[in-house]
Structure formats: structure tokens, C-alpha cells
Image (cartoon, rainbow, N blue to C red; front, side, top):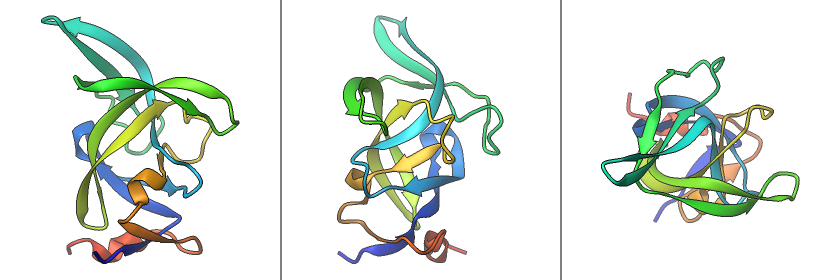
Length: 145
């Protein structure tokens, strides 16, 4: 399988979250991928547990204000960027990058103090992409015109 070359920052789409071409940081040092989420709430509807949340910050350029709901989610213990263990919700969703669509896991976290609301870790990148840390937005060359 040919691996596409991407940069240290790329625009990704997460259709199930209503997000199109949002900047994401590519972080080969992080194992899991993460997205900023607010107002996380587990609710019960018709006997099913659902996770509701608001993706991105209200000031973000791609912020829609729409709550999203996931039926399939779990909790996972992860180490944050400061090395402290914390429990986060984890969802599986599709993401689009370099004209390809993949299924991947994202943890939901507070990334409000970070420059990018989305982080792509090694688990998503493995066997799919090579990263040129000197460049950004290399995936645009693969997008259909």
C-alpha cells in the first residue's frame, strides 16, 4: 500500500461531527487522536446510553453550535500532554484526509489551551501516511478538484 505524504498540520473532515476541512495537528509522539469537546453529557434515551457533546470551541471558525450524539462510546484512561493519567470518553467515527475516508478512534478532551482543536496520533497515521514535519497542508494535493 502506498503511503501518502502529509505535513505537520493538515485539514481533516469529520462528517459525523459536521466538521469539514478543520486544521489538525499531526503528532507522531501521541498514540491516540483527540478532538476538543465541550458540554459532555451521558443521557439515556429509550433505555440506551448516549453521549452528547459540542465539538470545537464557540470561537472556532468551523464551530456549528450543533450538539452531536454517539451511541457507541467508551471510557479510556490516557496520559495527557503533561504525563498525568485521566479518563476520557472515546468515540469511533470516520475522518477524511488526503481524499481517503477512514474509521478511527478519537478521545474527547479539553484542548482549549491548545492551538489546534484536533490532534492526529500515531494510531491513525500508522501504515497510512508519512509525515514531512517541514511542511503543512500537503494533503490538499490529493483532494479531488
